[in-house]
Amino acid sequence: MRTARGLPFVCNKTLKTIMESIMARVQRDEKVTLCHFVWMGNHAHIIVVVRDNAQCVLFYGELQKQLTDALKRLLGFQHLNLWKKNGTSVIRYCDVDTIVERIAYLYANPANANLVDCIERYPGLSSWEAFSESLTSVLAEYSSPIPWIRAPYIKKLPSRALTAAQDEAYTNKLKAQAKKTHSLVLRPNAWLKVFDIDEEREVYEINTRMVERLREFEAEAREKRALRGWKVKGARRLREEAISLKHTPKEDSVRIYVYSIVKEIRIQMLDEYTEFCRACSYCYDRWKVGDFTVHWPPGALLPCVPPVANFFDC
Image 1 (cartoon, helix red, strand yellow):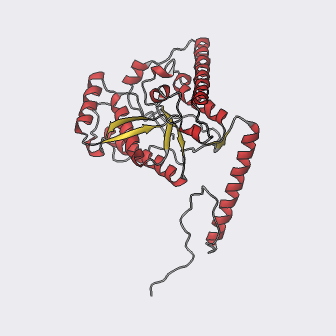
Image 2 (tube, rainbow, N blue to C red):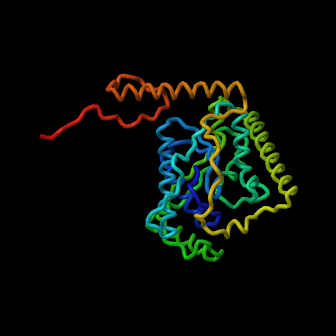
């Protein structure tokens, strides 16, 4: 999920408390199974196991809406167009090696963006702690009670850049006003069950390989910084950063719908996706001429039924 502009998801306690609250609230009915996530300044990477396509849409749709509402209140705005139109990419992964690569890349994002040297030092919101404590069991579950910060209690910030004292005071006030909690449940290894992997030894080997790949990504980022004479921004500066709506993101890259590092699997996935799109187009064309007997392919989100008659009130 990527914003249209700005860097609103700063690393202070206030934003992290509100964002955690929203994630726990949205996930209270387990729309998807949350495995891994990292929130950057203007986007999020989230690895989930999806059982139902409609629930997946509800998950990220509700997440975006509540985040927008919270930021409107924090900034004192009546209106805020926060997210890019069609800016959420739901990408399908179909093999273990690819997912290992993508999760390692996910946790390497802060280092690649020259924010911190390694994921352990990143003060932003992520699932790294849950993952690092869950390396062996496919059934590992990390659950923490999160105060439900209701929207009416979110007041305009005194400044877009909070001092440490202001941040602490605002966060404590939000938590004190919360009357209810939701559990934010993470299952870092749940995706392995999709591939029928449940032996502790194999789970540990895969996660160890993932961490080793993460360290390779971080080492590469470190070398690039050294060559250019750059330094990381650092956790302290990240916590003190102001909410910004001025940042202009880079030009969009090619939209990805399926991804695999294995060429044969990638070709097969692309062929399946092409056929899926063709079947959806055919079904919608039949709907437009009044034929509702066609069967949509599994995973399709059905559009609104097109009108097939006019009604005149005489």
